[in-house]
Image (cartoon, rainbow, N blue to C red; front, side, top):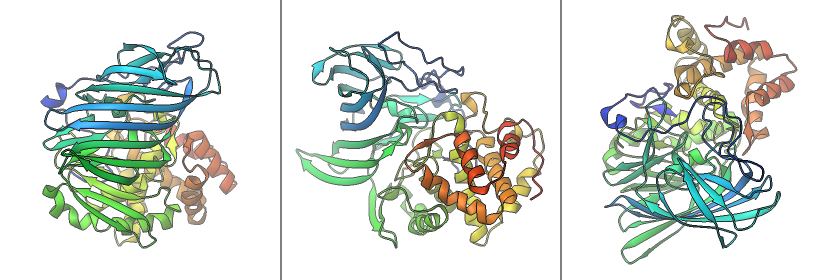
Length: 476
């Protein structure tokens, strides 16, 4: 993720606007969750995240979402059916899904009508029969309404964001629940099929590959398929009038680039290099982890001035610059394929993506990574860069703060200086390969680096990732 104006490497420290202040504020909370939310036989109404204790649910593991959506662009209303296929991880007399605002018409579990009630952003489901531990089950939710936009703890805007010709759908960290019922936590990844119907002349874009496009009665349905596991915050269902460009990289990877015509001229130069960036990134980080790639460029969606690493199609709320494209595509490896177990370790996403910018610059005639490090290290000790350690943001407001991006990248550079280039660039390839399409945390990464290098690196990571203040440099 990067902030606009598109100067890459900045955290998402957004302007607080009057319009944003009027939006519904999502209550996340900042205390650690106890994993509660139900007695014996109930799935908990949270996933135990240390920064976002109200997000996610436990008691089951989702394998697949099948979403059928119909969007009325003029009235900004959504009619949806979600089929959530999961496996119970405990006996379930009840369980919950995250859903914000939309009206639920009917819920069935394995074809039998279920009782439901709402608790803030939770849809509580009581199936007709207890779902036994280890049993696959299918929950179907019919719903409709006008999707809400959410305001995050850092005052940024996310979710189903209306535009003048449709909607720009961005979900980090919680926006997915504004448009479908979901286990809304990065620890539960799933495959997706998303079918979106819109008026003729409009384009509906989701993740993965477009398998079918059909028109009937003045409306067009776009059928998207994502076979690889995906965290819910990376899902999209963006709708608008776009110019669509289909192409391939030199290695044959399909690309789908959708650009609002008003941003086409300004975007052309950076987007023309998407194939090159994908190929270069594959050389540095290993094989591209998904079946396709691309981009979505929107025209000034209200109160959104950050780019987001939508899986297979990074999304930009305006024309991106080249380093922003590099940053967001690096997330395909770091964040999208290898996804943090909790939001506490967002630095594993943003530190690598920021360091990808440094490497691109270093290898394309710009400043070296060392020069970028030295410039940042000279930052006054009282500045935001040193406000908190990246591995311990303290609260949800800091999740996209400067330390999570820049100081985390500095930590990776110190790792490079400590272990040497040969070992470091092995880490850049072998880490995303070892955890491909999985979840990982800081402990996993530290253990991986120590095993690969044969060195004790706890002191380095403790200093750069977990300790307050400006660390001492590694001698290297």
